[in-house]
Image (cartoon, rainbow, N blue to C red; front, side):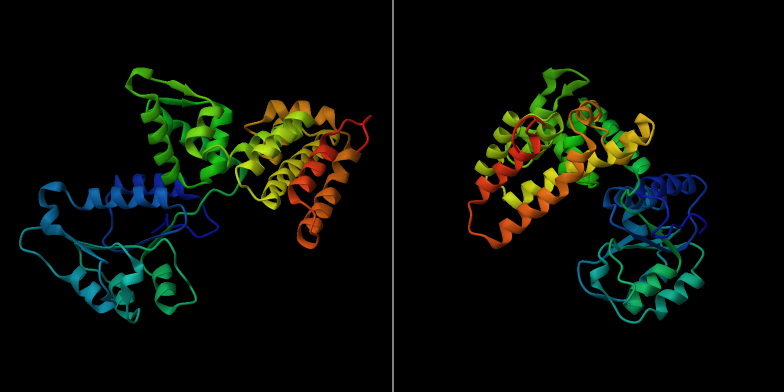
Length: 354
């Protein structure tokens, strides 16, 4: 099919939109494979395809679901080729690729010449092209690849979709709260949906439509007191606030977070600052700077933070992180004390000893 995407092609949101447009014109018979790590959009494409192919009025007769037990390729294709007495079309869904066994030849033959009203849908989020059967599935019929977002533009689209999901639940996410949710859940919109449901329930029906959720509420309800405190520490680094930075570092340590992990979060923010500083001094536009640093949720803090550090200070930060990493791995010093020393050294003003 013309809209089947490759791994380097459009991300899942775009593939879903193309799939819905194609469904409006009618779905061709044969093999459809749904794969990729963007399971949220994959699931929605699967539901839309089945809703289109299997009207509720004859669903019990038209649809067969396999995957609870092992099944051979020959048996799966045989089921797809069979005809029923009470339905005009035959639809078979394999819901778990792990249950499929056998040679790929029956699938390839079916994909090349399917019966007129026969549809075989295989859900396979993970395809290992080193395996003969999986390689055949990726190349036969229509293989729709739902990959996670990778570019800055795609992450902005992801954030917009999160906002729309929140609105469906009567919730508005503060920009920083949206960033925290994205930091915890990554691009897993299924988990985002679960967390938004939890937040909406916490607000209750009396909150009214469009209730605003701030970053503090998201941090406390979504991830507990420890996980997202890393954002508070990163912000304190950006703001060059040693008092708040030490307080945030101690909260993380008290919650049981590993010093090496905390250091990694700091290093990520330091890289963003360094990238933004270099681009700013080179004359890049503010929008380009924010996009490159992926600072959509702390753009105001970034602008202020760039005025608090010189380029030389930012260039010296990687060496500090490397030295701390070596100390963590090779010495018996108290790691919490080492972390606090690094935090103080990074945030001390230019006039203070570092």
